Length: 404
Length: 233
Figure 1 (spheres, rainbow over the protein chains, first blue to last red):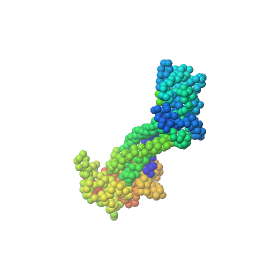
Figure 2: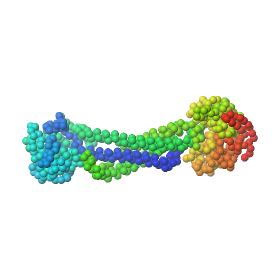
Figure 3: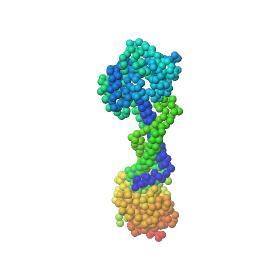
């Protein structure tokens, strides 16, 4: 009977209850959609970073330091690339010769990270050819072709077929200047990288330096990120004493970003639920205060305090039980629709690209989060019911019953 | 005859703006089984306060109150709630039905709190609503009933718990004369035929005329306590 009374009490003031239900639904939808949008954005960023540049696993010399990659070569690197490529979890492997240097045209100069690569391997690993917006992938020029980013091209004020000089230290620590010709200009979606990374054939680089084939970085792209641990174990076995790291280690900022995003999501959800909580406290307090005489009567005729408390809490829980799933349904529909069709933020594309984020976001959310957020909303409404319910318990039945 | 209410030296002092006000002042009262008693007096004479103390809704500042052998002063809040549930039926001036429940559900409510079986509830609710002449309004909600009909549901609800006695606080105050007369007929019949004790607080002459005992309060004190032959309706 208490459940029946509580349920019917919810619908005594339909408009008020509908407003609360709608608030819960909107609050949940806002939280869920924000979370889905953020996840979609981060997922894309991580995916772009891995497939476009970082790759899943990198192998370096045991003493390798990112601040000074130049002269620590991987022992037996080229053979190791072949062995790793045979692993069934691996999609592509690229052996790189990285050198920090300077790129200069006749009009300007800029710092550059020179990637000496095997074009075919690099293309499988990072899809470099698909990012070209001008020119062809290492075609059209026989001697010393180079591919540069659009941002660097703008900075150096050069275009296709223009000459570009790379300056770097050779193995004897002497400065070497080598002329290259631009055969392609790429745009990766991350302007910071486009401004720095240039790609040349490693054979061109090595011949200029008079060096035997060698590499100081192996980048490995996996078929599935979920195989990261298994693939790392396999590659460690192949790499011997070399340093094998996953993207979670060498791109720890991505990991921080993900965990930070999770914190933000929960903080944002908390803020929404807190606002909701005060709204519900207000509504339920009104509902209690306008029923003082009725509550007094219930206590007079023998409804004990536990049941009275339960009745008011139940009224609030019913609001959440209706509003919660409604919010989940709306947010699920929105997330699914925009997850499939994407949210086009090309208006802000420049700002997004400078951060390495795609301008089309596909929101996504796990069922765990839907469940968590629904439970959090129900918990918040129960907490919100406590104060009004306590107020009701403090009523003196003999006084309450005479209230007008 | 069994003593239902035994009050000795009952005093209730309220603190009104830090000035002590004696709502009830040293009242001694005995009410027997089967009585049809009206507590009368002008507004502020202490009728309702005395009724609240008898019903365990309020505690006296001084004195002892024994109802059905229970010393109410010694009961905790929860024990008082349980005591009210098992021993007393209440009829209020403003009916105070649960607006979201039908007449049947309102009558059944207390029996549910008493954990009576469904079969017993159904039988008794039907019988009670028939007794108060509302067998055809069982599924109506309070807003669909007149004031008189609502008060008759309140009487049925008060009787549902099979209480030792019924406390009715100004039960006819909001009723027209026809509804009031009708309600009094029902209560008088229940008192006569089923031996249910009624204690009213009222200043309605129609109720006073029907009572067999009239206790008059003034300034919180009993100034007269007379037994009389009730007038016919």
